[in-house]
Image 1 (cartoon, rainbow, N blue to C red):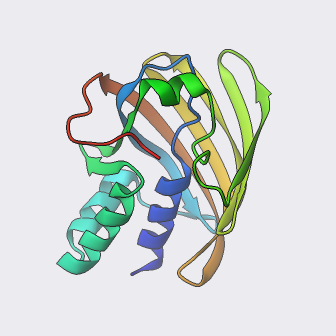
Image 2: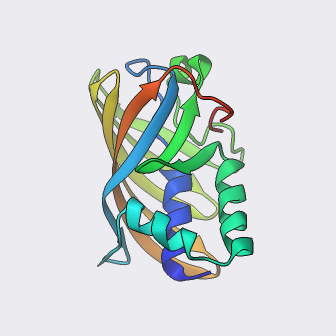
Length: 173
């Protein structure tokens, strides 16, 4: 699998939102404004989705299965996740069900959360700015190890609420 797609999968898995009461439960869509891997500008989510469509079927399925296992679905203009009411009300970072990860919220106001995290395959910090209960922007900077490669990444994403109904998509883990 090429490095861009490995980095993309990693960024998606670590950039789920800081879950907070100021947002609504339901289906959310995330799009990227800025993705950098090792200081190099990467294509946006829509370009990466196009690249994934060009992968051999088995590789594409592997990537989709990996994302689905985390409650992430490709679609629309980015990636979609479902957040349950319990997740939103828990006001926790997204790594809470990964026992091998630790996280800490370093600053919290009504409209801004800053955080840092440590997992076996990544560590980093970020912040989420809440624009409204239906929109927020997150920036995550991390150091990662994926597919035997080490590097650093930065991703800025915007999330918008699509509605209460998540369809068949299970809540993100």
